[in-house]
Length: 367
Image 1 (cartoon, rainbow, N blue to C red):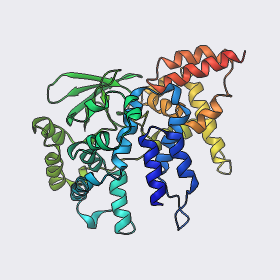
Image 2: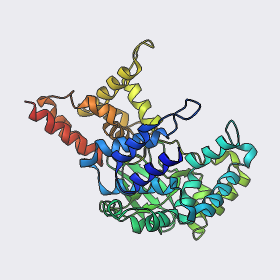
Image 3: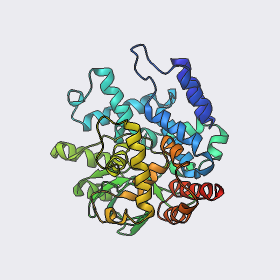
């Protein structure tokens, strides 16, 4: 599979999602009959192909981050090893790692550890190396200020409140208020809770480069005061209160949403209401997605918005950007739905809102 991996990586580095997916489809299973490719990578490529006309340039920048993390770059061998060592240390050592064997445990670190990803991309130069050595000019040209992302520091934030399209935070280093687009970074964060993350520049303003990490208040304060020593703050927390530190990413396709897949899928199934366990699972899911969109169009999502445990708006945005669901949505709406879809577009940031406008245009064209 090494030749296929290299070919898929090269296609992505050129910015050719369709070619990368075609390479991966040539051989999908490993010798044990299991899916060889990461499911979220397949989903990411499918989304890039389906939403290509609607994607903002910052989504391409996020695609570059994913590529830089997974790239087989000889120049990054030491960086990857150092990042793994820190991630393992913060989880309590090798004996504390989940997995069926050593190989599985290491794969879980590489695929789903937040600290590992941050160290590889930024502190050990993975993003800079990928841009310099592997990324094609066309890919970089389509991105949004990606070279400016390289040196962005880690910062600590307190969550204040949310609106459908905007999240309000306080930067603990400066005490200044910060607003970012609502892609779902606070979908599971309550007002007054803290995160650490990197705010990167884009043409649409600053946003998190990916899902920030929820941390206790004392860790956030230490990061704010520690002149960039965010790893030291996590080390002290891991030593003093190991049960209060979780660095696992709930993985998914995070190009256009910061809501973990399990979260927005839960919201969809909840919208499906009571359903027969013998029913076709995909049909139940699609009906739930349609019901969620229609509830939002008629104001039914407003009551959920008052529930501070979960932010429904970025979950809806994730649903609208899910290619298999979107295929059904194109056929669902008629001319009478266009005004509701256009109004809904104003309450969803990014590609989700753009999808609503396209759905409205399609519905009107069918009249």
